[in-house]
Each structure stands twice: as structure tokens, then as C-alpha cells.
Amino acid sequence: MATTVESADGDGDSGGGGDTGAGSRGLAGGGRDVRTAGDRARAAARLHRRRRRRQTVVGYLFLAPGLAFFAVFLLLPLLFAVLLSLSRWAGFDLAGIRPVGTDNFAALFARGSSFLTPVLTNTLLYALGTVALALTGAVLVAHCVTNLRFQGFWRTLYFLPIVTTVVAVGNVWKYMYEPGGLVNGVLNALGLHSVAFLQNPATALPSVVVVQAWASLGSAILVLTAGLKAIPISYYEAAELDGAGRFTVFTRITLPLLRPSLLFVCVTQFITGLQSFALIIVMTGEGGPGDATNVAALEMYQRAFKYGDWGSASAAALVLFVVILVITLAQLWLFRRKGEDA
Image (cartoon, rainbow, N blue to C red):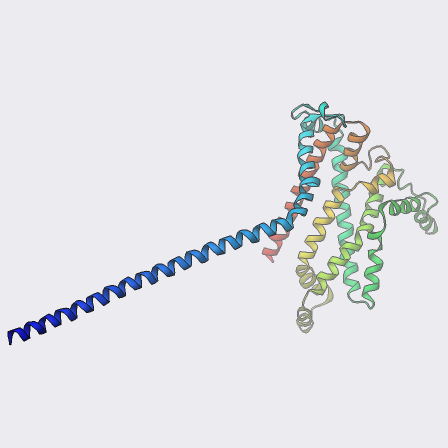
């Protein structure tokens, strides 16, 4: 009987040991499963990183031509201009570059220098006048074009000056400004005296500003027309139901919602005006009469190619770059602030 009990106990112990062994094997198997899952996750992460690296390499290979163009035609000339602005160089022979520190910048802002007045002043007035006329005219024309039939025809008509060369535009307007030209002919028909538009220092710069603004209308009209078409018609319908007049609709709905397009046109037109060179040299020769139409780009050209002072010309170019950057940032800040206030 005792033997039987012992056997039973033994069997029971054996059975318990078997369960413990099975449990141990189950835990060991579960650990292997956990380790296997962790290994799979790490392998997937490594595979994902390799794919990302390959995609990055492929992306940079596609960007390589654009980056090379940027480096060769933008970055390297900018670095070379910075080097020349701190040096004195007559051109052609790189061995002739002589460091002079900030002497070129000091000469630009020295008392009696013509760079600040009238050159930089003319540049700012030229750009401001161009933006004011082109932006005002483009807003009015774009608003009228959207209410007319054959909108494509009118947009094409106003875009023609953009595809016309600056030399052709400048020469045509130059002849129109002559004492016997079309503009003075109209003035004479109205009983007014002829005006020496390009020969009088008081009227030379405004005359060129008018031509630049006229030539810039096409691109501004296209951008503003697209912006006007993007405004939901429901706003105008709601304003009509409220009894709002045309002027109220234009100032309270059209202009605020047109702000992104206005910002783009304003920034691009200002940069174009500050960099203008070809139209002035075609219509006035060397910025005449005197320095009445001399602007920064023309001054840089004359200093470099006419007088061989590449260091001073590079310093003037960097000053103009800073002016453009500051004005652009100011415009972005102003439009953003107005948008937040609205």
C-alpha cells in the first residue's frame, strides 16, 4: 500500500516535473519568438535606412545639374565679387588682384561720392516709381479685363511688351519722346508746348520710369488676373445680397484676397526696378543728361568696363544686393503684418 502511494507520489512528482519542463520549454520558445521579432524589426529598420539613403543619393543625382549650374553661375561669381570688393583689380590678370580691405566701401560712402547721391537715390526713385505705376495700372487693367469678353485677347495684347526686346522698346519710346515725336505731337495738338523729355534733367528719370512701368504691365496683369480668378464667387454674391457697392467690394473683398498676388508682383517689380540697366542705357546713353538717370547697375557697368575699377564696382554690387535684400524682407514683413491685422 505504501509502495503504491509512493509510486503515485512518484508519478505525481514526475508529472509535476513534466509540467515544469514543458513550461520551461514554452518560456524558452517565447523568448526565441521575442528575440526573433526584435531581430525582424531591426532588420526592417536597417532596410528602411538603406532605402532612404538610396533615395537620397538618387535625388541628389537628379539635382546635380541644377546644383552645378547654381554653383558655377551664382555661387562662384558671388564669392568672386566679395573677393574683388575687398581688392583692387583692373581686370583680366588674376595675378594683379591686390587686397585693400574695406577701402572700396569707404570710397563709396565718402563725402562727395556720387554713389549715394545721385546714383543710389535715382535707383530707389526709379524702382519706387516703376512699382507704383505698374502695380496701380495692373490692378485696374486686370480688374477690367476679368469683366470683359475675349479675355485671352486682352491678356495677350498687354503681354506683348514682355516678349519685345528692351532695345526695341527703348528706341521706339526714345523717338516718341523726341521734340517732333508722337508724345509732343499730342501735346501740341492739345495746345501745349513741346517738352524735352530726355534732354531735361527734371523730366528724364520720370520719362524712363513711365516706359519701364508700361513694359512691366504684361506680367503683372497675368499674375493679378490669375489671382482674381482664384477668389470664390460666393464672396461677391454675399456682398451683393448685403447691398455693398462696387468700391466697397473692391476695397473690402478684392484687394484683401488679392494680397498674395500683390505681394509677388510688388517684390518682383521692385527687384526688377532696382536692377534695371538696359532700358536706361538704350534711352539715355550713359545715364544723362549729367547723372539725372544714372542708376546703380549702370554705375557698376561704367566703373568696371569703362574705368577698369572692378573692386569699386563689386563693392557697389554688394551694396545694391544688401539694399534689395532689406527692401524685399521689409515688403514680406509688411504684407504679412497686414494679413494678420486683417
